[in-house]
Image (cartoon, rainbow, N blue to C red):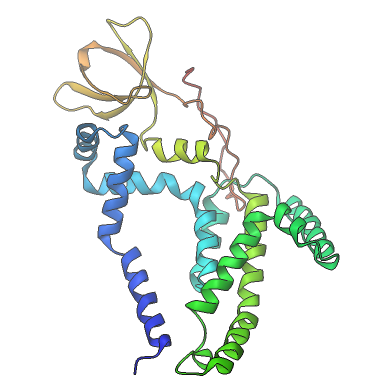
Length: 291
């Protein structure tokens, strides 16, 4: 007889192996290349060949980390991977842009906790949900994971009868309250300190942004500079990916007058520094591309 705990362990290992698999990383990189190239397979293939395998993999993954690491931290907490959660939380504090100072985070979090406690005391659970939908959703998700997938051995369903199953279910619910509360608190702190891209427009902008710097490329035959990304500069040709249309252009090196790195006007502009900031870092904003 195979217990559900054994199945849970096998499932957990299978999921972990899937996420760590190089095939998943390659698949995610290919999907992002297609999004960057406006779903043009020829453009995506050319971008991959220009940057090389390692450069393409790192280029497609690294730019996503600062924005999506807080969301990854919440996901790790839901599945109660505490060691990984500590490492992810440290990475978030080091690289993700923090939009509030630590003292402001503390004050806003204290206000939110007092509001939640007051609403619970008044049995106004609808207000709790309306004020903190993401935190409550995360807490419920953590509780469900605990109840159905990640319970300890002594709360195994086994071949228990109806009464035993009810008692085990109550035990799992009580045992899962701790992780649920931790997950809810984690989401509240993430929402205060970080602008996690729940907004579809911001998420789309982050995912579709190439990892190369945008440039103003002045060409002899053109009156206005081309806003593009330089994929390669080999054999006397510049291979450019335009910002607006995401089309590939081949321009002779002799026809290019100047190249100037610029910042595309997006919702990612003027991002603050991380929560933990090293000394000597200069927050120098690049000139706007003017589009």
